Length: 406
Image 1 (spheres, rainbow, N blue to C red):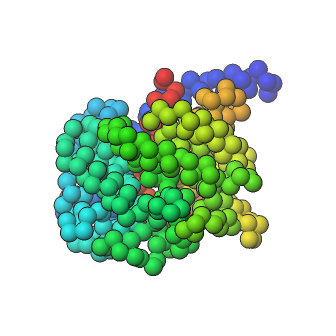
Image 2: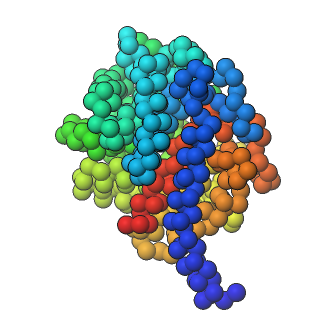
């Protein structure tokens, strides 16, 4: 095949992309609308396995429910389909009734299948997604209760989590916002005072809140977070993100997360654009390209993005999970928009082809968790769960549609 034929095929794939992405957005939303509502206990089920079997009695997570709230709210804003607004309202009401701590403030981490609090500790990551979901719901409904909760959680983060000495935010607190020894977001994480992941989703949540509540103090907080990434979190030696940090920002750089790299590349720039601060935009745009190039070290020849690289073992974790592929779509599109370099456009199309061939589940719906290093479906994983949510893939679809159509 000659260069002209390859270029023609690329043009065809690019022209088909918005139609395919819009169709996939509909498929994802249909899955969650059909299978996720819990018609026995209220809200949404806590877990569905890879064979679409609801796991009775599974706990319900704050992150899952906040992402459902955001996902259906943002999708209603794009589609204007009233069914999605109804599901967003279902999530809003459940979070208000069962996840909101009426005594100490903030969001519980988990409740049981009937809504009774299981783990009441205050993970800042969950508070951030609460703000993200509530601000999006407020955007489409103008319900003052949603904005009120988003602002309440924002002020709690600033009061308890913001570090006045070293900057940035501490990761977790006990139910009453007192000291918590184990701050881990998940069992696979290190027990670090500060993490990249929490900071990334605080700035995302704050930027979404700023869209509906453009406070000067909030803008200053977003500028602070973008500077923290530039000065503390992005490793200047290789432009990968550090993942875990001490209070005074000593970096534990034993692991590279390619998915978080490519996610941060475009998301930080988007947050800077939302506040229209020229210094932040310049910083985030510069870093967007540097981080994207670094993330592409994890790009396999089939278009899939590997999971992680472990420095200690000098080993690439060659699993390909669903969410880094979704983030790669937006990251490569963003880099192409910034530079006009066809390499990024080609990478985007190749990753989308990889997703279609390996990650979409045309028979059961939604996206599988991922494939292992042998290209086989990873077993024992969720379709719906604490961490399997309508967020990365819905957000990727909405971002791509907005960027391509504009």
